[in-house]
Amino acid sequence: MILQDTIVALATPSGAGAIAIIRLSGADAIHFADKQFRSVSEKILAKQKTHTIHLGHIMDCNKTIDEVLVSVFKNPNSYTGEDVVEISCHGSKYIQQEIIQLFLRNGCRMATAGEFTLRAFLNGKLDLSQAEAVADLITSDNEASHQIAMQQMRGGFSSEIAKLREELLNFASLIELELDFAEEDVEFADRTKFKELLERISFVLKRLIDSFAVGNVIKNGIPVAIVGEPNVGKSTLLNALLNEERAIVSEIAGTTRDTVEDEISIGGMGFRFIDTAGIRETKDVVESIGIKKTFEKIDQAHVVVYLFDSTQFKTLGSQFKIELEKIKNKYPQKPLIILANKIDKLSEDDISNLKSQISNLELLSAKEGTGVDELKDKLLSFVNTGALRNNDTIITNSRHYDSLLKALDEIEKVKHGLESGLSGDLLAIDIRQALYYFGEITGEISNDDLLGNIFANFCIGK
Image 1 (cartoon, rainbow, N blue to C red):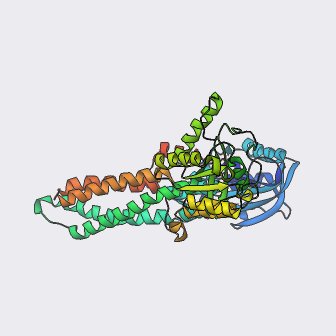
Image 2: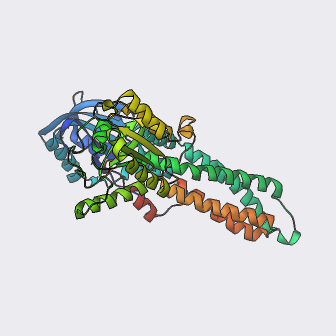
Image 3: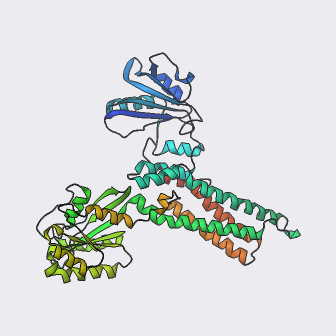
């Protein structure tokens, strides 16, 4: 894939703002900019040093469109590896479109989604996993997802895979060499060292594969289902967590008939809270659908918060306990937080009685905000952030996860073949396949369809 033309696009979000940046990249980017730019000091952009900024005006013949700052980045020292020009103009939508249309009329082409980063990949400025991390960095909305994206963009994951691939490739070369001397029955590859390498590769692959469970929830937000009987304060709790009136709160039981979701960051981790319909027996068709959805959301949740009204515990305690046991039995593997709400209305004796009857009970007054911070701390305790704190490589991309699984499968085949005394030509087949999957991750092996799928998810201008 060779892209020779010069592309242009808005690099900042569309819409009016103080400043907008229009980016050009390609062999003629500086030439096209020179044709439309009039420097206040009569500079020619092509004669300026790379990484310099110049004040002037964008002109359409004798018409001044805007006063701008033009940044020049000469190849290969630019994001794309090509000549790049970035025009910082005023953020009027009219000005943005006038400048872009001007360059389109004069020989540029509108960039497609992710085309600047695609060119960076094709020109060797980034490998494929680093390029994908650029998209993750743009969409990161909490500290944890940002940290993972930055680690991958700096090449932490790529370098780990590249090192394993290089070592495996060296042994593969020796085994392939043995095939050329098959009649002489010689071994160039030390089988003992090769077995040690395979064990080490297998260990690393398993660690990376296991990290996907953590990485996936960090990237997409940890889903938390808030469940319980109707009118126990689930919507009030959601509003208290979000610090806004997100869900409708009413004294009428069964107000929430559908799920209400929103996301916040707690301790740098994204949590997606789901306020569900109250669980109870009902003849109301609409409410029944809502209750069915409640159990669907519990299935999807990473953590379940069971809420009950502490003021009703004396009369309805057995009912709360039955529902609680149903959830425990149905979802035994899910972390469960049991919350007694409305404790601001209880005496000290009542609270002591509650604690004696239900183990691991958390106390809350959603209306007053009491216990909300403690709940947040409890939620954080369920998330394994050890790998994040240690700056270990964490996988968040399902494409990488799939390739790692396939690579591990091939490595296990090689190990089995080695133990079974399989001939070098058959071992070489499985080794080549493992190398293929390693190369698929970093982009050393790629095709137009794969690249098209990846970069189509980028925004235009990046």
